[in-house]
Amino acid sequence: MVKPDLKVKIGKLELKNPVMTASGTFGFAEEFKDVVDINRLGAIITKSITLKPREGNPPPRIVETSSGILNSIGLQNDGIEGFVKNRLPLLKRIKTAVIVSIAGERLTEYEELTKRLDKIDRIDAIEINISCPNVKGGLEFSAEPRSTFEVISLARKNTNKTLITKLSPNVKDIGEIAKAAEEAGTDAVSLVNTFSGMAIDIETKMPRLGTVVGGLSGPAIKPMALRMVWEVAKRVKVPVIGIGGIMDYKDALEFIISGASAVEVGTASFVNPKATIEIIDGIESYMSKNKIKHIKELVGCLKV
Ligand code: DHB
Image (cartoon, rainbow, N blue to C red):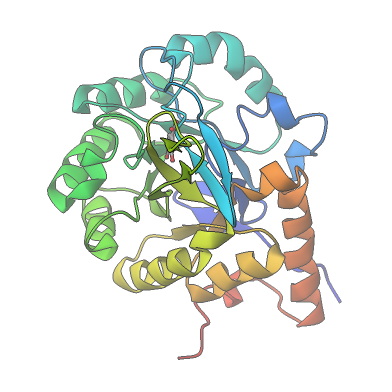
């Protein structure tokens, strides 16, 4: 049998396969380049960058829970200038799509970031993180359809690059937010970001995270994320990118069958740095075994 075709289109971007690294879990590729064949990935999505450098939140910033990770990093990064100087050179050598995640506290920050990234040829797409739970302002944009529409419209005015809007699960109706992003001109939506959560040390009676509350990722959130992807895929025409506790190729396939055109893998890379590659191989074997020629045949094929 011929090799199955895993190529997917997200806006103007053609990915060699549907498996990307979730923002914040793969650094800027440097940290993984000796362990993972980065060129095999569908795309790498960087840690979110902001306009100015940020030191991040007080420690502890990461806590392991029984079935996932709680984090509160606080968008630690070198800012756009640090990114261009220190991170872009390696990204320029990578032979797969590079998607830069951006975050901000104000509309003007998103505007300036999209303007600056638009001028950098090597960047294939921008993921707009309007759902960071750990900084002031981070969640506010994705909390309401109106503010989502505002920030995405502004980004759209400033770039022709493919735009992906990353949504928060900590909202009343995620379908409504996805719709607002689509009306504002996003090329795709990615969901979900982390669920708001906390953990306590009963001996010290102290919170386990420096900021008390943080974002939960990993297997614990998968069924909820899957339900949201299924709902959003029915509401929007743009491609949906599934995220949330994808640990192996079977999890990835569940998201694709529910309606996701592609997936992002995050927490799994902390457990097994090669998880992304194993997921690509697993999807390909599944397709061969089931005589599926193109990944498109699987997207949203849920029998209900
Ligand atoms: C951070 C955490 C997130 O879940 C996110 O989407 C963006 C940033 C952080 O704390 O840095």
